[in-house]
Length: 166
Ligand code: SF4
Ligand code: SF4
Figure 1 (tube, rainbow, N blue to C red):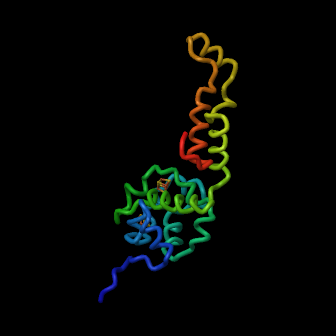
Figure 2: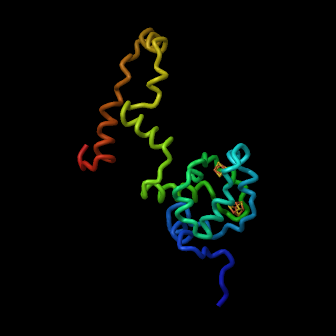
Figure 3: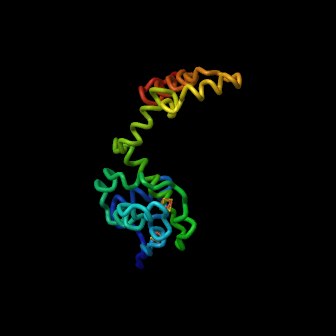
């Protein structure tokens, strides 16, 4: 029986291939066009999409899931546009982030962003100056921007505190 050239051999590669978005990982031929096209790779030596896919293919599960590298992808999809094999590193890394998050591996920067959102109801509280408040007043807009708090309390209760009704 002939073996397909790019069938993922590691259990981690199979796990990613079975996750939504990760299906095409077995088509990667490690050509490196994605890395050459990637804006993040152009400014950060630690981010190399081809290399990250290689680590998945050879089964470095713990290293990949505990790393912040899959979280550096900004999902611009330039790699997907240029890949000649129909692979989307952006989709693959999203699948990896889902697996990582389920196992509690979320970089602090993302965790802190979510915490701020859940606590304040929005992300730009510190940027809300007296000037903006005055402008809103002049325009007849609501100056109290805690309007999102009730909604966030419901989100928190439903998705973060295990309540079934919100
Ligand atoms: S994802 Fe596509 S562009 Fe990147 S190394 Fe694999 S085959 Fe090449
Ligand atoms: S989608 Fe991610 S991996 Fe692809 S080019 Fe953009 S930043 Fe790089």
